[in-house]
Length: 188
Image (cartoon, rainbow, N blue to C red; front, side, top):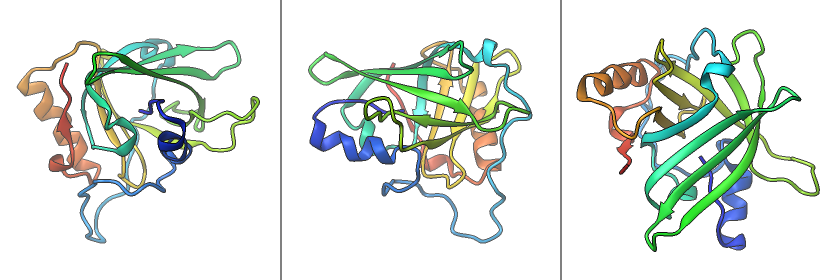
């Protein structure tokens, strides 16, 4: 997820979003036997479309102003891309919002996308990975990650999930080589 704010403080992180170039707080295993991150076999973009609530995330610089109420909305476009609208509530109670575009990188599965939140006169020079690595059969929760494990989010259709569901989600996260301790819960 990415949010806007002061130009100088947020342009560079936005450019590098999902590109894996920002230092991050990821505690993924350093072992060489960690399996590669694996996406789900398929994503039905029409079912994935809509509003998602952030349940947990790996802390990152471009969301540090967000104190609660973080959401992502995905809107299918006629050109086959997806409009991404990320929003959160800051400490002062004001909303912080960013709009980007996602494009499908793996049309066979729709599980690997590239996202850009930076546009210069319509030109988008920077695209970052957005991989769906976990997805509920009924599209009630999703896990988004990157192949380098620097970023990760747990999203849901509701602002909170029960403990049993979270345990299933963390099982998927750990199977993908992430450490559960890298994630922090997001306030609704």
